[in-house]
Length: 219
Image (cartoon, rainbow, N blue to C red):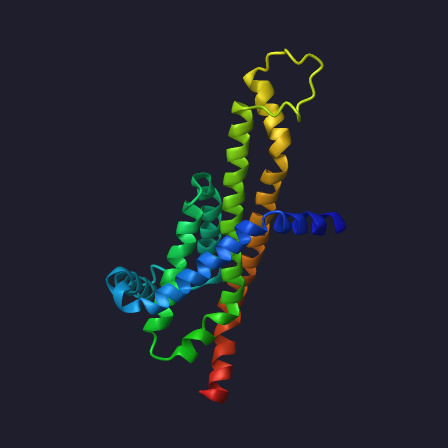
């Protein structure tokens, strides 16, 4: 158990730049979506209308299974698209703009925040970490390819310095050298999945009762 905690701690500490960039990206797009709401109507109004229509028609059901499945798919999409570096951030930025726009479009700011914050704390944290895991995955792949193209002979222990490395040799050495980055990206992904699962439970079973209770007092 202690080793797992240390691995998680190391994954965050050694990749804190990726986490910070993800935090700044989400906060920046949330604020931009809120401020630029009038200019984003043509983009997001059709999205909101379609979501509303799909919920009314039963195309989208607000059950734990559907919410959890959708959210987990977003997390894995952010991770996998890390292969293309910036695309993890694109998904996070889109969600940030959308939520900022949605909040700005609401007629009752206090009410809409009550229906977002309880599960949003975990959901946003999950998205931030998932995006960071995508960045770390890209870093791993970049270093993997780089060390195959240009092997680090200070890392590789060869008795014969004139030994001609095969592609398989280079791949094995590069994997060994950069394995920690791959492991850390998967650890961050695991944390993001756990947080998103918690967010799904709260969204389905707790958010509405909590919001309604507070509104009954202060509404």
